[in-house]
Image (cartoon, rainbow, N blue to C red):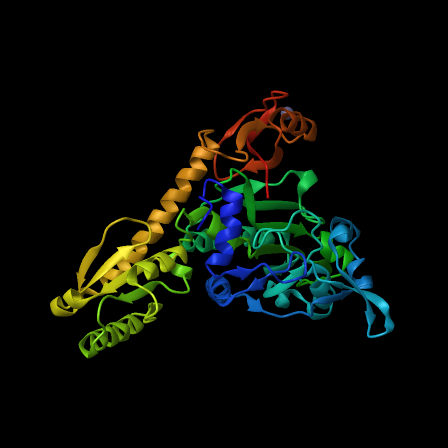
Length: 461
Ligand SMILES: [Zn+2]
């Protein structure tokens, strides 16, 4: 590692390649390679989300990645919101296509024409679908792996309901699910209701989940949208109620992306490299043998591996004899493995292991008979990561963030009028992100004195 974390932008660009998450040399702008270590991390996050969605009763689908121009243009407000970001395919071989095809930037316009065919009556509702796919956006701003790319790993839920209040219940469920996902990756967040002029194109309202990066800039890492009947009217998605009366369904969506990885890297890492939350770490425990590795030690390690496997832990033994233990320690610290186990002569003799946490200095001896303590150690790492990240977020909200920051956040009471938000945007030289629902309180608007809410002003990624 060359750049310290205080030089956040350089640090970030360096660590994502050094640690083996990505390779930025792919010669198409904004499109990066998921290297095995990075893909394994993303896969663990996906699996966590997938498991919760299945247990909450969603069904997984996989739609085509191309959308015809006609399908896309059904919802006008929606297409206007995306038209500058679309990649278009106009040719197949040497032939011009009959109709241009867009690469999906999100999948409303792919899924909703099919919902029109699938949904018949109230018995089909609620219908709750999700998919984990790549989406494509022609980003013209500066691209950065996991934060702003053109080929985005995306998780999207689309639900249909008989009425608005059932759709509102769904919005509550999303918020609970979000809390569990971000708890597992140790990322605190703000629930920010985007102002009307900045909501998702076509939505009734949007709640974004913003987190604070060490640079002082906010990162939107998830969004939920209430569509009401805005899309279903345009796509003619109707159901017959108990009396046979045709009604438009109410819809919601939930979107998350590889930005979750960007947040893990940016928020938890330090000068030595990544620190990966145990619940999603590709390798939770690395075992480093010290000194001569005779048959006795090998037998000891085999037994240990067997036990860790039975406990359901993800481990790796670094037997590479080209490198010294010290070098290996640095490498695995840089890759952010939460726990390290050292095995030398002394450990073998005393039937114990020496454990160190990535989040803390010092070592700890554990008898082999008490290996279940390792699960506690992993839980402690998670707790430490969450507590640290929360301290940063709070210090930002309280205006106490210090250091060489590109920017920092501000909060202020603002009402819902755009003119008041604009006035404060100018004053702070930041963007009004919206009212914070899970932090702050109600108060008089700083500009006009009417009823307002603690609102977030930031320089977002
Ligand atoms: Zn006001």
